[in-house]
Amino acid sequence: MDSSTDGPVDGPADGRSRTAVDPWARQRTYTRLSDGLRAYRMIAAMWIRSTMAYRASFAMTTFGNFAATGLDFVAILLMYSQIDRLGGYSLPEVAFLYGVSATAFGLTDLALGSMDRLGRRVRDGTLDTLLVRPVPVLAQVAADRFALRRLGRITQGLLVFGYAVTALDITWTPLKLLLVPLMVLSGAAIFSAVFVAGAAFQFVAQDASEVQNSFTYGGSTLLQYPPTVFAKDLVRGVTFVLPLAFVNWLPALYVLGRPYPLDLPAWVAFAPPLVAAGCCVLAGAAWRAGLRSYRSTGS
Amino acid sequence: MGTGRLYTAVALGGFRRYATYRTATAAGVFTNTVFGLILAYIMTALWDEKPHLGGYDQAQALSYVWLSQALLMVVATMGGGFEDELLERIRTGDIAIDLYRPADLQLWWLAQDAGRALFHLLGRGVVPLAFGALCFELALPTDPLTWLAFLVAVALGVLVSFSIRYLVALSAFWLLDGAGTAQMSMIAGVFCSGMLLPLNVFPGVLGEVVRALPWSSLIQAPVDVLLGTADPLGTYAFQAAWAVGLLALGRLLQSAATRRVVVQGG
Image (cartoon, rainbow over all chains, first blue to last red; front, side, top):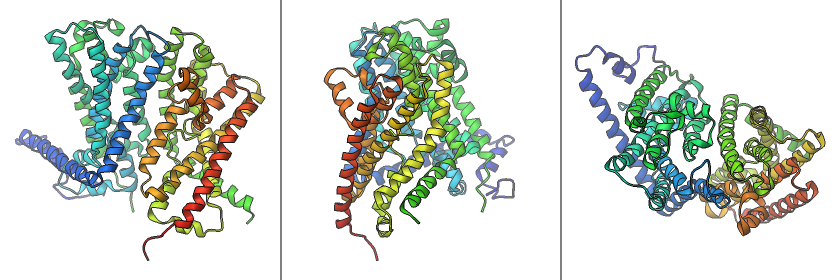
């Protein structure tokens, strides 16, 4: 399907471009969002029913997911069997960073884990099927093959986080308590923006889903270690260019009472929700641009 | 067509098949480089804390990181080579057609996997290693004979990796769905090959066990040959023993499986 030809007037691309001059634009944007969420829920529920048909297989793959992601932390434990501190950080402190990063990433992976299949859909032309349905494409792509087994990753992250909180001697203030759920949710939103922007990039670069992996999986691996381990330029890059540092480093260092990297001011610990919102807006724009540039695979 | 020429053609086919996806290869090189960079900093911090950990100095530890990124796809540490396709052929029953072919099943897939490994060595191995060597102080040898000895160990590593993945694929004859076995194999591959952390850093008995398992042939063994921390002949003997044992087991299971294969449908 070529969107430059006279396609169906109610197609997703046309509907969106008209909203700019439409007095009902705000109302319609709201409807699109709730439509998208509703569609997402229904498609996800369908995939859950489908996987629940094979309960034993579901249990095994959930455990496998738990074990596979847990290996990262086993590697950290093995390192700490040889040393007391890494980059000046103790094991519980690293576990705190790890727990937040893994849980936030796990939430994103649960919600949007199928986004990296977009390149394949562009290649084999099955994206066209999604374009003709009266449901936002993003919701369809995101909910495709929704896999509840990805709860394994979240469970693992929460367990490590629980260990960190019990092992650390944090003097909890109301502000610190508030910051914990805030950073996990904002972190998940930042990772989501990276997933969506990565998917948008695949409209252009079709079979380059591995580039996306280096920012998503690579990013979450990076954040599992303290910033003191990495070169200044790398830390600068993930603070100011691709703001992954706001997922856990900056808010977590406030909770841990540790100095920030790059001599940043104290208030940056509370910036994650704003940064997340900004990232989501940019990723949404990238997604729309990507979808508009989409040309089908041809005959 | 002679037997040798047949399998050479299959291997070339395997090479060409992966060489077709140029953007995917470039994207993979990018990923290996990013992960190499992250791991290089982590290992630097680790060796800063405890120099000569596991018998490596810092330059050797950094070389280990970049070599393991270069070898990751060659020895298919995380799986994802021919076995996915073979699993699917067994599940769907297409395997019956393969069994009719005048070619040996195991050798056929081995030839294809060899072609895949060779492509990944050139396509995804060279660039990350070169990047690592430019940006970090590595302990790579200059003697071409050492590199040759390394390549032999890599080839044996591919053979061991193939023999493990062949067993994973054959499990589908009994389990029908091989996804569980493939996942377990991936977990064992990542953990026991030395991909996460050099195996000589693993403490105590755990270290001795993982170094004795076949997966240590994939990454730890070739890297140690290149870094000169292991005797090549002893390493080859270790790798070859696992390869022969696992390939023989594969043959045994294959003949047992093909005797009981029931093809569904008309």
